[in-house]
Length: 315
Ligand SMILES: [Zn+2]
Image (cartoon, rainbow, N blue to C red; front, top):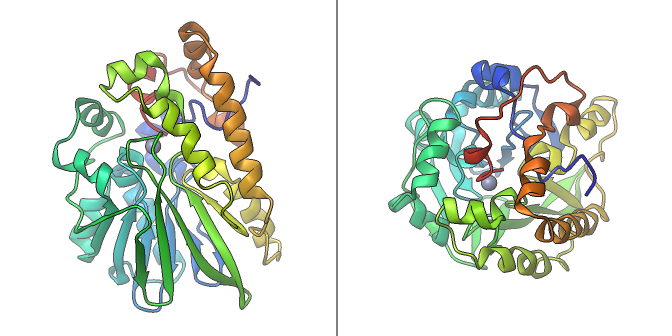
């Protein structure tokens, strides 16, 4: 496997965890009613449905100020966030749900399978909540979504597809938006990291072995989806900030790339296949190297050797 993997250890170095605002960057308009409001680590997407704002995934609670700042910078009022949809049961995607709900009163949605982890949290998720900064909380979704269910809010009809592997009930989402008035198909793969699928991580986290096989099957399940505009549930999955630079330079369709979905899934499948053949020692070595700062060309200022055990569970 190449040294760099966008599916490996992409957690922020300790300095950024101690100063979470260091992860914040300005929001980016992706399509006519679709915005990136996340940070360098965690993706959050905002859809202006015409019937309230819908937020897809929250960051960890430590990054909630940055999220609120980005919503405000776009000219929206945070209290117009009426719906919060969560892709899967990992802290870096749901940690701030309760805090945001307290501000907005938004209705919350999550796949039925991962919602079980909110009702009866496994130990590894409790650890993850603690290790990703302060005040992360489990939440009780108002609506639990089934495989194939549609979430229709205002002008937006989101199809939810269960893609088990990254977690037991990760969901991918597909809907139609417009770019400069032209209809385009959006797709987001709800959880692509596979660091937690080693035998030792599955055992430590008390997660089913079947996830190893399901991870591959899920890639194939959505392989033939038509996607003109691929989103990522981490910004390094679809090069959000690189495209954001192009948007800033005046390119309105920087996020349009009809070949990206299959290219992404192909890379994911290939890297995962290699991963399955690695020894535990090779996996630990592969994972230990932090790549987030290298990805952004930022200086890596520390090593976080004592944290990889918990961190191998997420992404
Ligand atoms: Zn995750």
